[in-house]
Image (cartoon, rainbow, N blue to C red):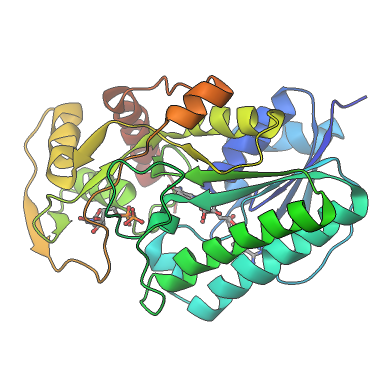
Length: 318
Ligand code: NAD
Ligand code: UDP
């Protein structure tokens, strides 16, 4: 008998694929739901056959902008493209995914009395004027910019979660995820980690947007998955930041990749995209206090593992 039957929306994506495997390995029956916009079954690699044959792993091709009925105990709701390049490709669809998608998942959770966790984002803080960002900060978000389909979409998704909690007493969890990286990021996803590492491995110049002094705090994917599991198991209804609180500039990141590869890299300046946040670092006090969360993988180690993943992908059959 499986521990829980768990729906993971966006389960074939970067974070979703790691989460699905962790849940499966812990004895859960996993339903991986995805429309395969940015996700791929290949993200399960050589575990794919084992998953299918186990009888405890199901793939459902579905778009969360439409309702669905499934018998489940818990929902990790991750479906939504996360890279600015992907979420700005069809911004109206991104809003529908965040708003209608979350509404439908909440409707499902209410119907079957499931606990639901939303993968929200540090982007709800926008270009923050408070640093580092605690969950009590309401943010500094442009409501009409090119990032708004994602930022404001996630803000409405959080509102829906809290209203379902207050109005229908639904068990909700809200994870505000900060920049996460690791194996299974898409080569073409346009985020800084995949861009910089793939450019370096292809001997191309590293595209540094703006002056490269903007900062982010990068969390290795296994740490993030650990935080998601802890949050789901907790009794915390308030939003919780999840990530790593070591802050680096984009120029520091180039140096880190140079150290990993053991050779210098060339950079080329590119314009800073509109509304690109200048600084971002999570205040992890709530995660540490309420969840006992502590990121374990330092950037140097995470970079080694991620570089090694992209080396394999770039040298493999296309
Ligand atoms: P991803 O793009 O790799 O994964 C998203 C998955 O959702 C993909 O498999 C995609 O095909 C699927 N999807 C998209 N729209 C869908 C729809 N309408 N219906 C069904 N499936 C759909 O991105 P990721 O990095 O794995 O992010 C997962 C979640 O975590 C997202 O909700 C994202 O907003 C959130 N998040 C990620 C980060 C990060 O740094 N990776 C940071 C903050 C928040
Ligand atoms: N960035 C960059 N070069 C790239 C891609 C991104 O300098 O090729 C910068 C981008 O301007 C931003 C940071 O890296 O300041 C993180 O960008 P990403 O798209 O990974 O995530 P987000 O902006 O959503 O945090």
